[in-house]
Length: 183
Image 1 (cartoon, one colour):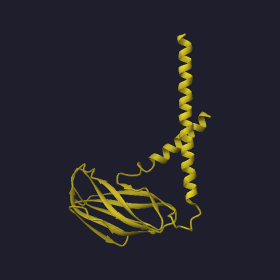
Image 2 (image 1 turned 45 degrees about the vertical axis):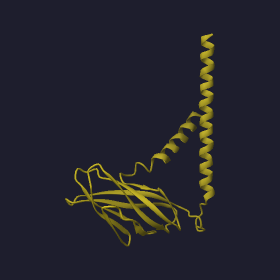
Image 3 (image 1 turned 180 degrees about the vertical axis):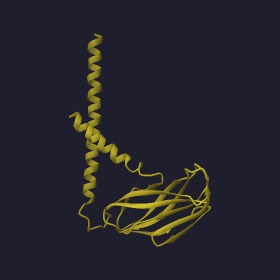
Image 4 (image 1 turned 60 degrees about the horizontal axis):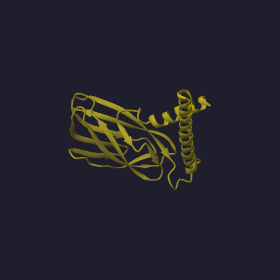
């Protein structure tokens, strides 16, 4: 029983932490539905000791850039599968958020967007951002329906309830043992 609980805990932790460990540029949301335009935000930190002067986001086939939103102090441009923001500058250890509207036609699965930070010295820093494409509300071509995601969510709730019951039972057992040893 303990092995099963350990395996499930490890699986849940892997799911929760996998997106955060993928790179320093953090895109939100991590899940993109097909057939809809989604506004994504990219939290871009400047981890270098020099000012950052640009950011480039490139999308793969199956993802179309609809619009790169302007940010105060930055100029946004779109050229087919690439959005570029130039300006700033973004100081060392500062973070700026850039918004990008994308239309996803890719099949469900993983896609990787490439982000590149640009510096006046000519230096660049690349961060891949792996996201998950999920079936959209009207996506009839997918073999995986929303029922699958509901089942996973339900299993997570059952797991959480079981874990809570286990902790409660363990505490009750420890309390009973302490009561017997005190008397």
